[in-house]
Image (cartoon, rainbow, N blue to C red; front, side):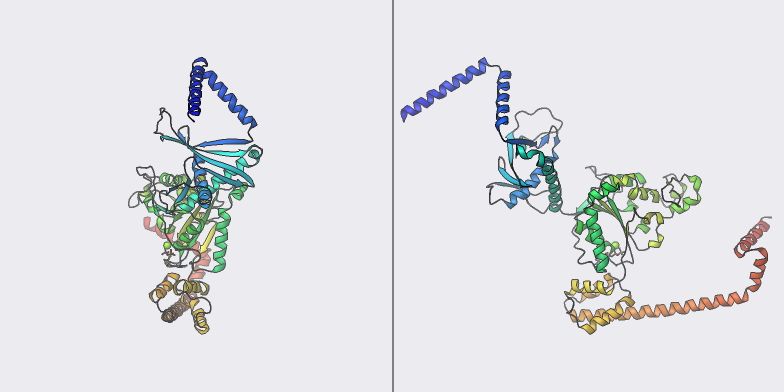
Length: 527
Ligand SMILES: Nc1ncnc2c1ncn2[C@@H]1O[C@H](COP(=O)(O)OP(=O)(O)OP(=O)(O)O)[C@@H](O)[C@H]1O
Ligand SMILES: [Mg+2]
């Protein structure tokens, strides 16, 4: 044994001697060249290709590294017990989910399209801090992907695309939805963001939303088509965005529908408070800072902006209207801060034109996969240019509660399925629901109040519906009586007016004569 140790020691001594000799005799350049030669020889005979994905690419963070890390985290968690003994755990900002990661210098195998690959996470200490504008981490991190040479051409690109897509999905799923608002107008905070965000936890879903089931299905499939439609939008040359206009009386579920859309698609919401935005350029700035896969909402659009701007400017053609692209409608005029119309009480110089550009102009495409949702209680007040397809592709009427919607509310609040309530009672509800014109919000109130006692809740609901229906009937009777009265009066006036009509006839056309007469009167007054 002793002899063995002595031989080993002398062998080590000889090796050390030769190493020192080689270092002194062979210059470093030659050593490097020999090393490279060996590497090349090894690569020639190896049946694998190796790809390195480093954390920092020069000075920038390598997005692919982050994507691979996230992607492997899902594989690592699912196969954690099978392969890895040591996993790193992380929880990101705004996230309630813990992600698993491949620990340092650990390996993981994966299969894509039937091809096996091996990932290795390599962490080495950074040797010397070279000069950099930003401090670099002390460790050099990277992933090495090992693929069989014969498979590399057919899978590499598709595999990396797949990883990037999957990582984006995981990132979105792991992060809580965010609700952004622009309470400071377009001004930016210390981190350069004009939006403030809070986690979005609205529980509304399409399942809880009370509306016509067919209409609901249409909207859901429209949203699904939109989310899966990247190739379609590219092929047709359209910007990947969609506009929804939700209109109807207060309390019919417009805001609840927006929350349901966000929860369905997993998108963030940007709630744009137009009254906080002072200029069109601020609006543009806000738009530029929104992310893809988001819903941009303007609630109560009729109250947010003076939608008569365009109409006013229609008469004011010399005011510099720009062509807007809607046939038959004149281009909107930009109203600048110095415009007399905007001075005085209203200093807000955001215009309808700015808003139209926001939803449909070139700037609306600075990002992708975005849904614009406008809500209003008065669709008739909106400018037709705002409603046209392309801007608002889908108009959704959120109406008073109908019988199918009522069934959804009964299920949500009382847990009553079809058949749980007596048929006679259901028939009574069905007979009265349309006449009552109650909103889902009104009905929810009645149900929520009595949710501990289903019988009482339904009894009170029926009473409320009946009394509302009676109220509506009385209003209709009164209106009809008033209309009849007006019609009678008009008839009487028509009988008394042949003389006037005759006089007008001699002048050639009622309205024209009246205008002319007034004008003459005016002229006489002036003279
Ligand atoms: N269609 C609906 N389905 C389920 N719940 C509804 C529906 N409509 C209203 N509600 C209930 O009424 C409340 C108010 O609804 P919501 O805020 O969505 O109405 P809205 O149409 O946006 O009203 P407004 O026009 O005043 O903004 C919601 O919290 C929800 O509980
Ligand atoms: Mg609302």
